[in-house]
Length: 472
Image: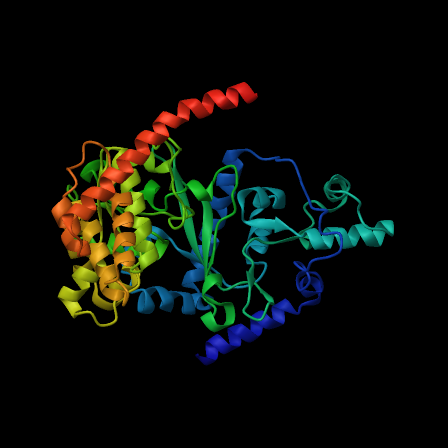
């Protein structure tokens, strides 16, 4: 750690002890006894006002990254992430160097503080509002409605009752502010194609031992102009690329998306895939990702008819999520493949120290391994990918030779392969049996058993409906 960095840390610590801010903000998110009483203020500003607030604040964030206070952030992007200058210029990442930075910037620019709250830049200090109510009325507010009316009539637009949105709890339980890298999340106006900043994702630059792995990122607030759980990072910027090439690579996070975007830059524009990330869509542990129940709508519905390579992290849970997502996309009419980074990495560097994600692979090896992995995914049938995944999983499991483990692997394989659309290739029974070291007759028997169960369920379903109708 440099002397300059130490000095900035001391400055931030001193700022957090400033009597105007620390007297309230050091306790701002403590849990008081009346914590059920919140602030609920009706919206006052239009969508254009909110987009305008983000547009106004963006130059301050970019300038902060370019200033002396952004030195650590710049080193993170250039030395750690190895992101090229052209990409950084396109992305316009920014920096929040200290507490109250966004609040002070909004005040300088004449952005109403309530507009900043609705845009997701600021938040109201509920604790400070409760405390002032108690001081003036001699009692606690008894309801959210009472506190909200008091706030609107007495406290609204007073900077003492607002804070920057991003908030971070350190590993020691203390709340921290400032030292955030800002990632603009853009939206695209469908008719005009105009891009606008709908919100920001934040990446903490504090040491991981201070914040823990889970504290590195702060998601944007959900607002009227940004629904984070239905946002594909980079889609707005990459929309033209997707339309031209008809192909896209889906990753999990922003820096994976940037690594892939940098890696494929050298390909001709006509064949260069777009690069997007799932953002707030939780790829793991869910049965549907970014789609409606009928698998026809939702954010990922825009990929209908495209070629897709799914490039998630290099771990078992991510493999399962990628295959599940691939199955969903096939039902939308997408030609889909799943990147198997482990295989391409073994070609480039052997099996030593497999990168955990595309971003790390880019940092360590550059773009060649990513490009090879993407090409392999887009030219490999999904059935083959499923079987390779099961073989790798079995090779790592010391109990994989037991009958029950092989049958469990067969269940998982059939779940993935039998759920594919009816137009997919027939199930290769011999290849499934070979991959799982099973007799082909066992595979056939398992499929027939599933078919018998499906027929029984279809037969029983009308009877169940009639019985429920009689009970009603």
